[in-house]
Each structure stands twice: as C-alpha cells, then as structure tokens.
Length: 80
Image (cartoon, rainbow, N blue to C red; front, top):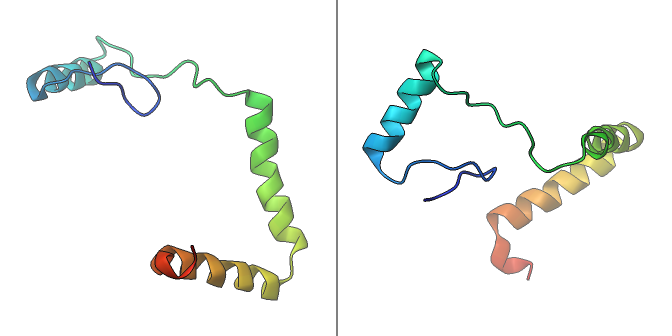
C-alpha cells in the first residue's frame, strides 16, 4: 500500500481513497498526523533562524540572493 508524504498509509485505489475521504468528512476517521518525526524545539528554532537572517541582511544582499536563486531555478543547466 502506498504511503503519503508524511508516511501515513493510504488506499492504493481510487474507490478506497474516496471511502477514506468520506470517513474523514463524516468524522468516522481521524486525519491528523500525531508525530511527523521532527523535534518540535528544532522546528521552532529553524523557523526563527530564517527570519532573523533576513532581518540582519541589507535589501541589496537579499535581492542578490533572490536573483541567484531565480537564475538557478529557471536556468539550472548554466550552474552545474
């Protein structure tokens, strides 16, 4: 049976998936993921780090990084 992006099991066929969606909608089945395997403290610190880094950067530096990322995203063959 295939698994979802967070490892949850899901039906392999369309009808089985439709039945599961119906059960979630009617409250017969719970759709919440209890443990995603990540440390909660590490997730919190990680989200703070990016924001802090952006605050400390000049607008010119942020623009430079954004341009470089866009260039790699849209022209990956140029930057191997």
